[in-house]
Image 1 (cartoon, rainbow, N blue to C red):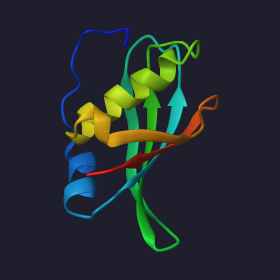
Image 2: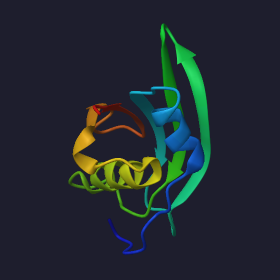
Image 3: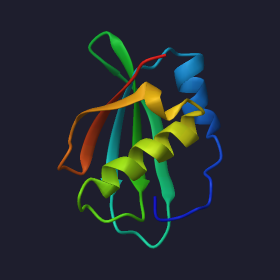
Image 4: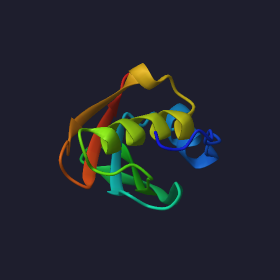
Length: 103
């Protein structure tokens, strides 16, 4: 990540995971922003599963996987989960990313 500041746990994200059992996270990402910002966090029902949908602005540019690494690290911080529990399932070269959370 470009910024050394830690991101506080977001209560909406943490509740979605620990109370609602969310395992899929969809992130709409704006790279190369001047600062990190969680613009939106909401739950959606997709098929039979609850999905956490986030809109994020991140500081890393979309080069050499830097933005993907920052998104994963920020998600782990926001949700209060270990980084190894998140895996990028799709959207490696897209602003729309799907992560799976294995707890």
